[in-house]
Length: 163
Image (cartoon, rainbow, N blue to C red; front, side, top):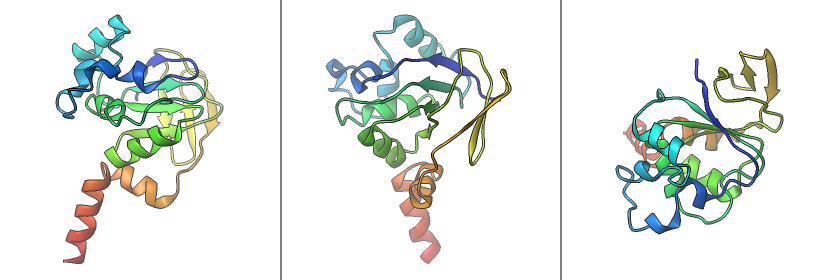
C-alpha cells in the first residue's frame, strides 16, 4: 500500500520541485537528483532511495504552479512517485500526463506523512484514518496517456495496434 512521504502546503511551485538553477540538466535520467533540492532532508532521502516506487506526495491547492518546465514532472517520475493534490496547475497537469507521472486531483484530501493511501478509479482512501475522498476524474484520453506511461508510449502502442 503506497504511503505518503511528504505532505505539502498550497502553491508548491515548479521551482520548489525542480529549481531553475539546474535547468542546464534536462535529461530525465539526470533530473531526479535535483527533486526538491532546497528541502535538503527530503532530497537526501529521495537520493538514498529511502522510499519505494509508488510512494505519494500530497499537495494542497495549486500544486506545480509557476513555470512550464517539464523537468518538475520528470524529476518526480524518475523516482516513480505519485502526486495527490487538492488542485494541480494546468501546465503541470498536462506535463504530468505527457510524461506519465501519476497525478490525482482530490479536492478534499487529508493525509499526513506515513499514512497509507489507496487510489481507486473514483476515490482516494486514507487507510490510516478510514476516510474516503472523491477525486476529479480526468477525461478518458488523458487518463489513458498517463496510464500508458506518457504520450510517447501511448502513441507508440496505438500505432503498433494499427499494424
